[in-house]
Length: 123
Image (cartoon, rainbow, N blue to C red; front, top):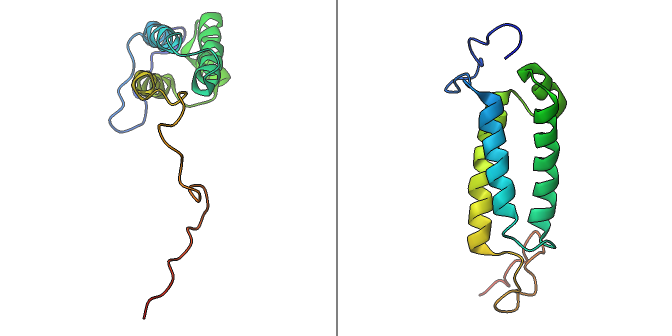
């Protein structure tokens, strides 16, 4: 890391990452490999792949942690690592859930109506 060594993130329970570039690079690679197992037309794959590829490119272009944080604009690098870990967990779950597949049965007619209709009053 170029410049001063970060002593704290200032966030309770979030320690300073020892090798943030390496950690993020590994996580982004795992996410992309997981996404490649999904159909290309799957919305989750398309949009997540776009974000992860952008972030991986920022990571490649910046040797400083500060540069990565400024360009990605989603918190400190330690927070980016937590975000990437969570995205990897979600991507793996999406492989199991397969939300791109058709529904097994017809969705209820008023599923997307809010607020839900009130049931008629009885006696």
